Image (cartoon, rainbow, N blue to C red; front, side):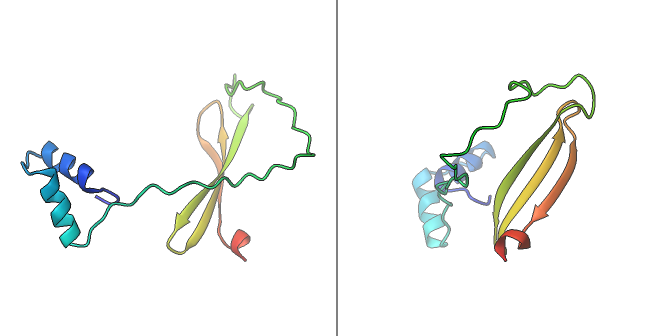
Length: 111
């Protein structure tokens, strides 16, 4: 159940046909030392330079492509892990939706 707190555990049990009270689930989880994870506050990683000029919007926010390899879009994502932060960079073909390139970046940013 991973990050479930007592309300979600109670709801999951109810879906499985197990009848019990939410307070009982809460008490049993507390006695077992189990607690749900609170959502972390996200910190933005973008630090904009107030003097920088914005890049031209070459696709005018239209992310559809008429054929393969005509428009690629990219993203970088931060993934917290127990071994430290992991960054995943991807390039996606807008026509097919397939990932055309990816790279894990761990040591580059932490060293």
